[in-house]
Image (cartoon, rainbow, N blue to C red; front, side):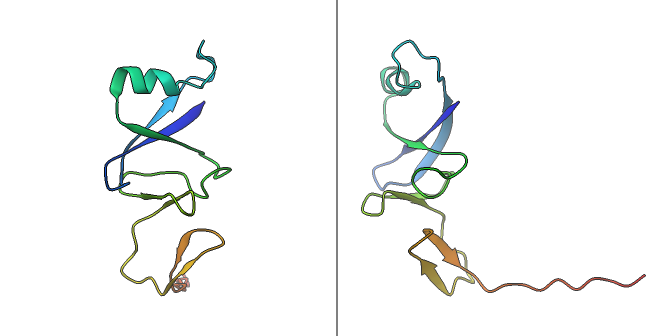
Length: 98
């Protein structure tokens, strides 16, 4: 299976669909998406092999980094250029003794 993210004019992901690897056109369903749904579609990888992160609704496609970037969380303290992810403080979870 292949996955494609549709982006709007602001490069925001508005939906992610699964393509058919066995599509007769040999393009994993990309042309079918264009012909039948229109819009701008960018391939994304469920395991992060391309474009750093799997696209999700609300993510932004950064053309310069060729990456899908999640919305910035409120507690972000920076951005990791190597992974294209937000840096957030680690939260320690206390375990309850029984």
